[in-house]
Length: 90
Length: 454
Image (cartoon, rainbow over all chains, first blue to last red; front, side):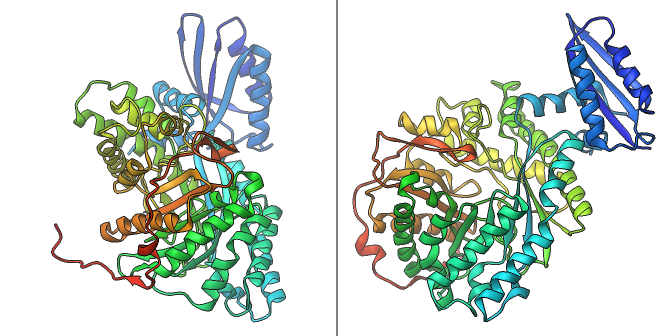
């Protein structure tokens, strides 16, 4: 399994999660977990996804998410999960 | 399972607090390139650097993208060139050919600096060492990316005062050769006492002779992250202050450790060390001086600054050592002036003086770094400044360094603008009383006694 953490930050409105989930479905990326908080009108969301079925390379994933982010007015970033384990676990 | 708060803490660190991996530096041994024919030597050096480091930049960028933390610099350090070129170079001009070769190789592979145009002369100089040192002004003016470092002293050997005196002249001549660019050549020239063999940071990086053929060393950074963490513990005790720095340094260093392991795997080159230094940049907030202010000083340089820096340096090491399997290099806090916006501001208003910076170097990782001084300061005075700094390193068994820039044609009240990571600052005043009779004595300062410490 190739676990990647996707972070989304932006102003909340209808269709953000749908757009992101569609992108993952179209690219054969499985969503393992979603967590979200909304502070006033801003949405903070993380998705843990498995990119094993996505064979176009990490740069294409980052590029695709960037485009989805622009279309819904949010910043979306992808990072390998390992960096969070390294930084926050002994 | 990662927590939302952890993900957004990391996100904030990268987006707003300038968390980055400052450098992935590939150390390459050139000992197997040694050849008595200069043309063949240069050919071998170029081929080896380009073949070993061809993918360094792309791999660094790739890792940065995948983990979401930028790798600011990708660099190369090589075996001290005085050792490599000794058989082929008969004159300073011959050594300049090697500098041009290093510069060409650096441009080919896309690294922004290549270090190791160096000589280790802490006890004495061979003819090759002297030729290399004499070639530095020309070498640094005709090349763009070559960095030079000279070791002038160590705790075990004492200080080579002949070389210190010579380097006073070389610093001035290097400044004159690049006078049209605010004497920027001196920004690529550093002198050391007790230099480490595995330092990934420029201008002092070189690949020591005790190192393996090729190695990956990583320098982490993160002054902005430490400062932001400290804003949450204002007014708390020293215990809380220290714990906060330590915990933050742990997180920052773990990023470096991860990147070092990944770079090592992808480039098929052994992992050497992670250097735990906090290195500032001219970016707003990415400043050691800001951390000192956050700890309670009105400006960096105010009384208390040395103690604050000592705490910072020690806690960064304590947090970092736990986070990495191999720690090395300089590992501490850097206190450059031009490269740190708030440090430069403190110097300009007179809160931070050269003498205070010297005191600060007793408790942090390097030394007098990126300090612009008037162009008319005599070479003997520069040699005196170097000797003072070497003595601090020698006696305290630590690395110290001097990277000082006499800006030709400028004086106190003027400004220099180097741009990029080198930053800009006002010219700092230097004590005008002479030391020529001292530095002109010639010979060596003996090594200090290692017992009866008090």
